[in-house]
Length: 238
Image (cartoon, rainbow, N blue to C red):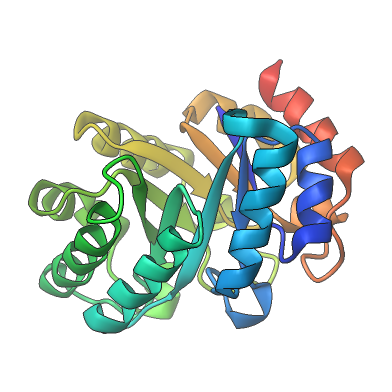
């Protein structure tokens, strides 16, 4: 499994790199689960990663928790990709049916792939989809059959400390991973994960796990700590 850690600025990105994470995921926690950061922050983090790690570490960028705004989403995706992100993450937060999801993701994919075919689009579903009245993650098969996304992700839409593992059973998470992988997609699990969740996550075996609060000492509003990133990386690699 790859380890994705979400810094909010360049200083936190340094801690992520020092902790040996595989993907530096630029986001703005103040703007939501997948809050978008500024293009100049993405660019600065990309420059830092290239200078410190070269191509061995990838950069991801969240572009927001979206309702049905394909134009806005495609413009945000183009900006994140142009600023240097290798993965562009879009959240289907207030998307409630397959048609809306396909329209939105098609616009994002077109914007990103027109810049570079090697860049990857991450469609983020929500494990707490029932409480936020969002589209079910189990629509992924029909959505991915219609649009060329690269990664299917699960996160929590409301950041109140409750974990993805509280909203979906291990069997449901395995199903999401297996169905996505059968479509040729990479898979990612995130959402207020904790160190004690790592053994179960390794059994479910997504391609990527994504964290922030876990490596901030439990409070996602605090700063990322390189030592906690390093500890988590070691646990994931064991």
